[in-house]
Image (cartoon, rainbow, N blue to C red; front, side):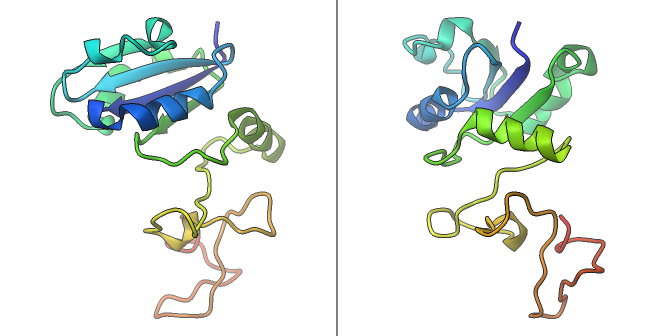
Length: 159
C-alpha cells in the first residue's frame, strides 16, 4: 500500500502538466487521486499511470469541494502525508522523496513547497523560496504598512 496521497482537481486542458506532476511522485510511495471537474475521465486513460489512479468525477466543482467529500478522515488516515495540489504547478525542480525527507526531518505536518520567484507567478511573498534556507516558516521584511519582524505571529508574515 502507498504511504502517501497526491490528490488534484484536474481538467483535460492541463493534462500535460498533470502528467509532469504525477511523474514526480514515485508510484511505489504515492496513491494518485484525480478529481475530474470537466467530466473528461476517459481522456486520461492513455496515461501509463491512469489505471492505478483513483478517478472521481463531478462536473464544475473545486478542489475544496472534492476534498470535503472524498478526503474523509477514514480515507486519509492510512496515509502519512496528503498532497492536495493545483493542476497548474510547475514541478521542474521538485523532487517528492526529497521533499518528504525535509518534512520528516523538520517535523512539518502541513507545508507548501516554495516558489522560485524567477519562474513562478508570486501572489504571496511568504511562498517565495529563500535560497539560503532549507525551510522557512516566516518572512522578515521592513517594508510596507505591515512590516514583518522576528516577533510577528500572524499573516502575511507567518502564513
